[in-house]
Image (cartoon, rainbow, N blue to C red; front, side, top):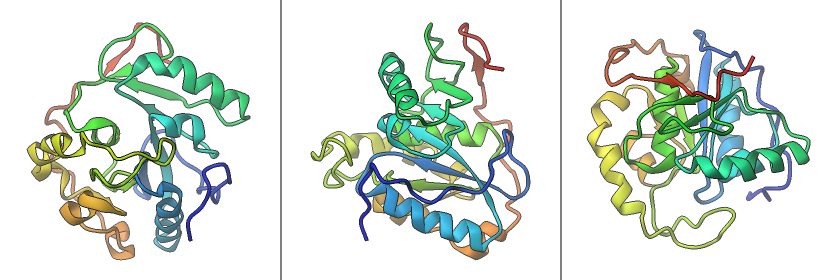
Length: 218
């Protein structure tokens, strides 16, 4: 059943600030019906006895009504809109705010973009933080998966697939998706996969996170 974005989805289990063995990163972006996908992903994580940490991209920074640990965007100027609106709604302040370059504003950390739009950027950040289980919600990479806010086709989706394809091998062991082209590409999360100890094989590759001159939040 579809879920209006103003309703509160179930509260995720307590999230650690750094990944531990039972942590799962859930990436929340805006394709299709991300809240419905989130509910299903959260149920799987609960069944697998996994805690979750939320990585929210773009409009989800404003709209996701439960705790966000990492706010991520390739449009850092828009943090000045999303974050105040999030505060005004009474939602939590993300501890980490990520962009693809050093940016004077609300950004606390930066890392290079992999050219796969915000969904891939969130995924890259989750991997750099050490998560070996990353579940994508609302990251369809389909033209026809209308955005949950704007309700229009995303004509740039096909071009952004190149970034995912370029990094497929180093992502495949660690990433699963709830819908769209990324579901076809990486497969769906299962309780068995969530319970599995996925060996870290790419820990040092292409990892170059930096701290913004805006400083790390306490």
